[in-house]
Image (cartoon, rainbow, N blue to C red; front, side):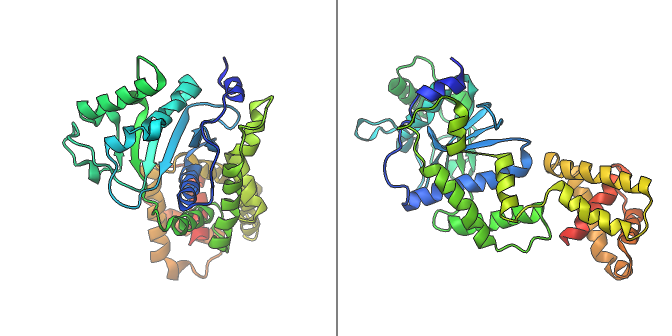
Length: 358
C-alpha cells in the first residue's frame, strides 16, 4: 500500500489531553526551533506537527519522503537512562516503543528515529569509551551490548516483531534549547533567521515569534483521528507546514524579502551609477546565483571564509569608502580580496550583501 494512502486509514496513537502544559510549550518551541535551524539548509521540506509523532520532517513538501521522526521530551532534572526509555508505564508502550511505532506505520519511508531532550543521557559503557553525559548525539551502535539488547527486546516485544532496525535508524540527541526558557531562545533564533532573509528588516522579534508560534500551535492542536480524508494533501493542510508556506507566512507578516524584491533595490542603486545594461545583467545573474548559494552552500568553508574576508575589509576600509557610491565601494573592496576562487560578479554581489547586512 502506498504510504500516503496508508496514512489515511491509520489513526495517530495519541491525540487526547491538554496541549497547554509547559511540556507542550517546550515541544512546540523545539519544533519551531528545529524548523528555524533547518530552513536555510533544505531545498524543500514538510514539517508535520503532532501527527503520529511530536514532529515528523519530510524532505518533500508534497509527499512523505525520507522521514525524520522526532520524539520530544523535556526533563527538569537528572539524566535519561535506558531503563527510563524502555519501561512500560501501566502496561502502555515505552518511550522507545512509541518512537519505533513510526517505523511500523511509515515503513521504508523512515530515514531516522530521533529521541531529543534538553536532558543528557546516562548510558553505561559506551563502546567509544566516552562519557555519555558529555555527548549531544549518541547512536545505537555505540551503546553497550546490554543496553542495545534491552532496546531491541523492548521493541520486539511491544510490536510483536522478530527483527528490530533501531540500530540503523535510532538517534539520541540533546538540544541546546532550555526547558525553562525555550520561548526566549526561540525568539533569538527566529530574529537571526529573519535578519539573514531580510537584513534591512526592523523587526519586533517577540511579535514575530508570537505570530509564527500561533501558527505552530494551531497545527499542533488540530486533531485528525476523528476525521476522514480522501487525500493526504488534506492532512498536510491542517497538520503540516512546508518551506514555501513558511516563506509565504513570513512575507505576509512583512518579515521576508524575496530575491526579486532585494534585486529591485540593488538594481536601483546600481543604476544611479550609470551602469551599462550589459554589466547590469551580469550583476542580476550574480545576485541570483549568490542568493541560491547562500542557502545550498551555507556550510561551505570556502564561502564562509570569503564572507569573513569581505566583512573584515569593509571594517578596515570604512574611512576610504564612506564617500563612495555603491559601484565604487564594490570595485574598491573587490580589488582588495585575495580569495578569487568564485566568479567575479558572484563576489561583487556578495559584497553588496555584506554591505546590506552591516
